[in-house]
Length: 75
Image 1: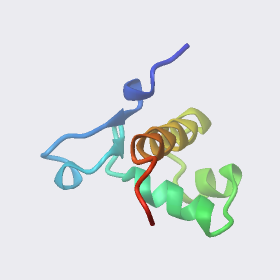
Image 2: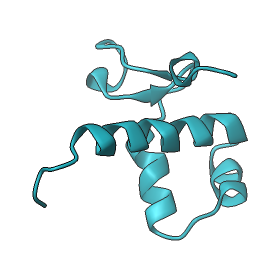
Image 3: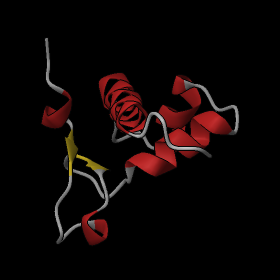
Image 4: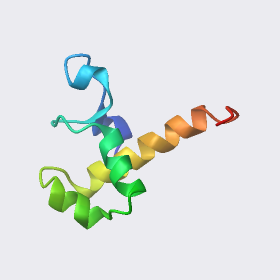
């Protein structure tokens, strides 16, 4: 099983340290925003052909980890 951090990185020299898909300058939040607006995996890959299905799934897993860590915080 591939580890999430094989695909998601946080590097202060890339996108101001925001979590990005490794090897790109595409922040995780962009992918999550696309899902939130109703886009599907095929549409995201069409918009960003240099990423893969596994990259997108890693973004979702990363977001899930963040939400789990924030559990209990009122929104």
